[in-house]
Structure formats: structure tokens, C-alpha cells
Image (cartoon, rainbow, N blue to C red; front, top):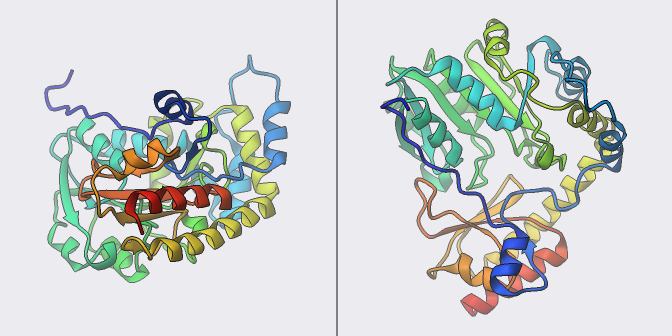
Length: 346
């Protein structure tokens, strides 16, 4: 292995089956991975199931899918690329950009995979702590210099759920020649998207969250025109399967399904926020999850014993005894709230 490589494993949340087996439980709800609890459009499921030419490789151009994405986003179809989730987009970006010692700015706390990719690429992590309400503030400009190759902005941010101000993102883009990567995995749950087009901006989105297709790993991004050709040359051949692409196309065709799911999730998010405020200091969210610091140790473990899986964020850079809980269906959220109140006696 390369001498500079630092290996650290991404730790996903426990599965329902694991928790049932470990604690001898019959009923378990998973509120740890920010999935859409209502699932994908039935039309997407049917499109996936109906494809049978599994012995043939996908068309690497993914033209039909990119055209659907273009219709949905308003982005230029020729500048859209697809990948195996936003993770796949990021992996290609790091392959192209990061040499040993190149500086990657990461405002913390944020998505742990940013740190893993930086270390795997032998880049230098430049950590910037977020300000009030977890917003990126003026302190980030002290970190930007001529060595800055990549700045990673998750908006809305995972795990905190806050959205950034458009003005600060614009200032960041204008202050650097490096690539500013804007991760909009949760954009459908927010009130706005970043309306920005610059030669050093990459905006990435996914079908994993609002569209409910997490298992199919379908991400996409808008690249600057000059960056499309090198990106396609470096990306994994056939990053997503044809059945997955067909499902994503059908999901866009049935856009009302996704929007109805989002509205239900947003309504539950606000209810859950109000209930949580009675027990803990919780951060307002523009995503499909809520984030708070637990007043007790081992809260995630205590909730597991009661059949509720949440995300223990204590191993996220910049977090302490923090918890992230996905907004589920009403009955799942009720189960979480009941378990929380039992543990915290609130």
C-alpha cells in the first residue's frame, strides 16, 4: 500500500436484523440512515423488475436518465454525469484532483466519508469548525489558500440538518481556484437549492433519499463544461446498472409520489422537532433527520434495547455525545419518542 494512505472504516448503522438478534426483540424500527420510510414510486419498482437483459452491459452514456435529470433539475444535459451514489461521484473527483499533500477543506461536523476519501488520497485535511447553529461562517476564509484543491460543503448538512446561506457559498466559490463541491443529497427536503454556476463548482444529488432508491446507489452531478471530459475518462465504467437507471427514470416520471412523501416527512419532522424540544436541545432541520446532543451517556445503546435504531454521532469529527434520528412514519416516530422519554424521564 502507499505509505501515505490512512485507512479508516466507514461505520454504518446497525441493521434491523442485527438488533433483533442481539436484543431478542420482535419489533425494531430503523431511524439511523436517513432513508425514505415510504419507499420509491411503485412505477420505479415496476421499471426495475421489468428489465430482463441482465447479461448485457449498460449503455455507458446513460442518455435517457441524464435527459430525465435535466428535465427535473433544469441543468444542461451535456454537463450531467451519473455515479454509484454521491459517494461514487466523490470518488472520481478525488481520483482526478487530489495529489499527496493537497489541501481539502472540510467544515465539521459533516459526512464522515469526506475524511476517509481525503486520507485515502493522501490529501491534507483542513478542518474548519462550524459557527453558530452549525453554519459555515467567515472563519473558513482563514483556511483557504493557494494549496486549497477542494472544499466540501454538504447543504443541507449531514448530520446537523442546517442549510447554508447562499451568500457564504458564493463568497467561498469566489475566494478560491479550487473545486467547491456542494453535496445536495437532502435538497428535496429543504426550501431552496443553491442556484450557482461557476467554473469551479460541482453540485451533486442522489436518488437515495427523497426518491427512496437507496439500495440502487444512483447519484448524479452537474459539472463545469471543461471538467466533463476528464471526469468521464476517470469514472468507473458502467457505474450503475440498467435496471437501476430505468427505476430512476420512472421515479422522475412519477415525481408527485416523491413530493407527497417529502411533504409527509416534513410534517413529521416539525412534529418530532416540537416533541424533542421538551426533552433535549435539538437543532432545526432542513433535511429528513434531526440532530441533538444527548444529556446522558449511551443513549443510542439504551434506545437499541427498546427496539429503536438511531445514529450515534460520537465518532463524527466535531461531535460529542450527539444523536441523529431519521424522520420515519408517524408510528415509528412515536416509538422513538416513547423510548426516548423512558430513558430520559422527560
